[in-house]
Length: 77
Image (cartoon, rainbow, N blue to C red; front, side, top):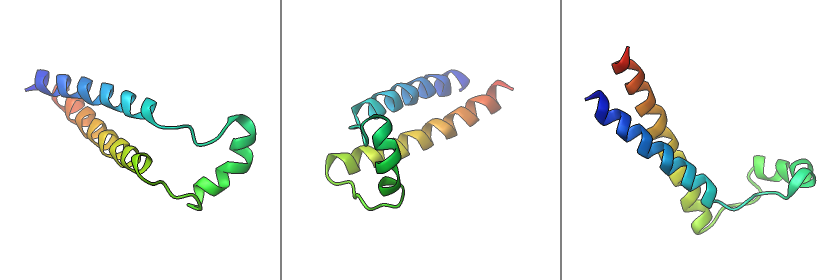
């Protein structure tokens, strides 16, 4: 059982890395962090299409990774 969850954890980790790397950058360097960060924070720019799908997929994979890591920590203990 523990080995199954460890393998699942590795799959979630690789999926999370690949989904994050597929996403487009939201700002360009330090100037984008200062000026464009507020717009992204308060939702003035809406994600559409592939960006929205990748954003939601990232949230789902991150939640799965978090839950799986808690299960593995409980089983190893």
